Amino acid sequence: MNFNDFESVIKFALEREKEAIRFYGQLLEKANFPGIKELLQELQAEEGKHKELLEELLQKTLPPTDIPEVEDMKISDYVIDKSLDEDMSFQDILIFAAKKEQKTIDLYRELAQRVSSPELKKLFDFLVSQEKTHKLRLESEYEKHVLEDN
Image (cartoon, rainbow, N blue to C red):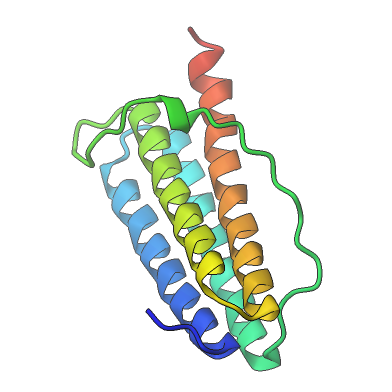
């Protein structure tokens, strides 16, 4: 992967968003609970909004100026990874999705370290922040529905 300019980073991120939309669609097919289906539909829609935002940024060719700080609850960091299968519980789906978001966060952080341009670093930091919002949402749902029930 070679990121020499703003456009190459945005196009790469757009592909990750398309993958995320498909990913949440796959999880939707496997989800058996109405609550998780609703959450997954919302997350899929959020990925669609991120895709639209990136498409807008591609037209501007400028990194976003405001990068919000997003809390990391780190809940999914300490639970066992599950594989994607038909018998996934609500808890399993939340863990699987949160871990997938973390992998994307890690990817963007790694890529930020590889670029020399301050603008591209800022763009990757923005992408990290966007993915962290998804992870936070999933971990908040985990805390609300799994940890509080136990």
